[in-house]
Image (cartoon, rainbow, N blue to C red; front, side):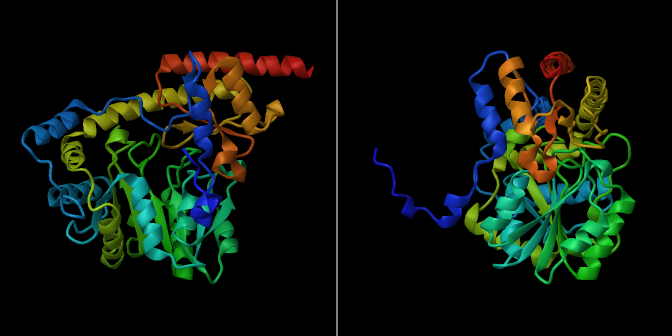
Length: 394
């Protein structure tokens, strides 16, 4: 088949870099016996009652479109859940939209608020799609690099330094992917003060809000004065182990959600109806399953963080999500070199930290959303790899 002339492609599409995470998944796919600590996906199957609700909806013939914003019944359950779990109130009629995953919610949020030249402060290390989404919406990403000395938490002074007359929003993820760091209430209040001072929005990616281990989670929208300037993004993929269902939601003031809804109508129309029926059941009765998963993740987190520190890879304790972000600086390798050699020599797949932004260099992202037995074997192989490096450097 004849290859398309490159001039058919937009400049944006040509310049867009492929996901740095995919490179290592593709490498690992062709190898046998690989232990993957790279996938940001729960290793739990979606709870049975949730799957059963979707099956029942199909058997009963509910296969048509829903309302653009999602079934009212689901939006009511989301509103109830947000009030119950996070103490924030949203109108199911006008302030909630059901989306095709949290990623689509972020995409339409960027397209709804950005004009060409508008800037969005991106707190790094961060999920790989944030900056490309800003660029595709015509905006300018302004990365702000957090430091390992601060457990990768953003400082108010850093935000102040990044502000310009073109700043439109801050993109924030807590608990964070890839570091697992979680902002506490005091730290969120400091961010709120800056958002109010400069009259900007905050896009809060709270997809990992259910997966916290040491303290109660505080939603940014709960902070005084922030609900009216927060676009809250969440979904069912992580906390409810529903990644393949592709279902998320966005909560925001009515003026914003109505703009988001117009873009959503034209781009997607509505989220899959069977997934929406499943989500209703998850919100109503899935909390015990979430709590069981959190208990398991906590045990794995404690094991892997302790193990990393024991084998010489300094690692802070993540407050949430299911990622550890150990430093590999002591090995003398770059994060990409370390990840590639670890995969090829020991069959352990991790993600190099630099794909999440320059401040991630010198680290690797390791997901502990896999069995304890797999984690133990991965640590065994990584220890052997590090010992070989140390021996060769003598």
